[in-house]
Length: 270
View 1 (cartoon, rainbow, N blue to C red):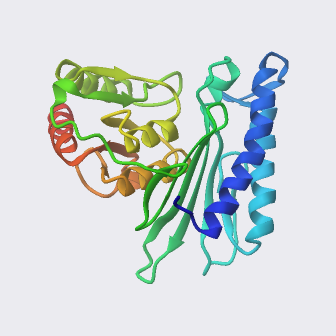
View 2 (cartoon, rainbow, N blue to C red):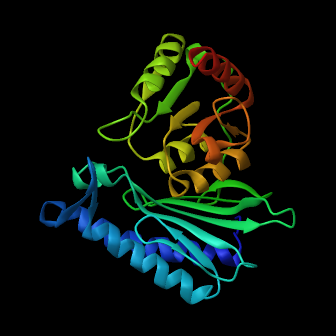
């Protein structure tokens, strides 16, 4: 049985504590008081409570580390220490509509000697299914104690691809339509389930064969990107480069399908 590091143990304990509350609130979702953050972008009491729990648990264990939180923004720590990047409830809209597909996402980012920032540890936890996807740099990706590998499919006509769809106030509809028009005729199916962290975790687990999306935030994707890479997959921007966060573009798959998807996306964006 594989054992993860002490840091991952701390992350998972915090996620499960926050997840227990989310699960209870999800069962009472019709009673939640909801406020608007922006067009079609809702945040609930449960979202804020989960973030507070995660912050309290993790800062207790690593008091000098910084945080980047979806709701509370950046909390500075010791600049020589890592920081946590957290989405306390990825899939808020699913949650508020009673759809049981949402997750807690926690990543640990370190600043290397070169000055480059790199994700070293990742956890994506689904409170409804009690699935804990985790990865550590150089140690592979796992679902509980089962090793994860990206899909072995090599042909687009067998591939199931995940994406996110632009919605009111978010995303580039014209760009998405061009990519969809190029990819959809070539693949076995396209799914939009509404939680980027789980989309990437499912690519790592081989449930999806590929994924593309733009207009995301670091807390949506930081953990999931490490999961895919440690499961043997590739995550790049739409140009095939390593500037995902900078360009806010994400394309993930195994080596064979990534190459084919990248060609389709690149042609669509010319």
